[in-house]
Length: 116
Picture 1 (cartoon, rainbow, N blue to C red):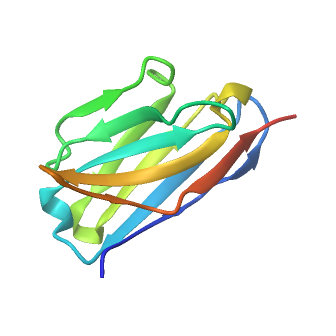
Picture 2 (picture 1 turned 90 degrees about the horizontal axis):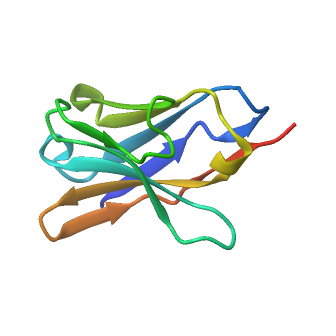
């Protein structure tokens, strides 16, 4: 049974930091590229960051570049999203996604709220 379980969301003040985690099971995690997306109320789902299966290549949306860092530990079947200098516009549900060719899996999401 494939599972992606996100954690680490919460309420944080502007300028603060959070670290999201996504624990994977039920598939060969080390073969999959991994992504983070987010969905804010009234907006389209937005790509945030991606990391290759090896961890050597990362991409970021312009809106988070320089503030967010994605990493992975294949030995732990886990990916992370370190989010610094958070802004109110980062408020959204953050989803973990695994992708290999036509195969894709999604987590249930974790809420991040940036507010004073």
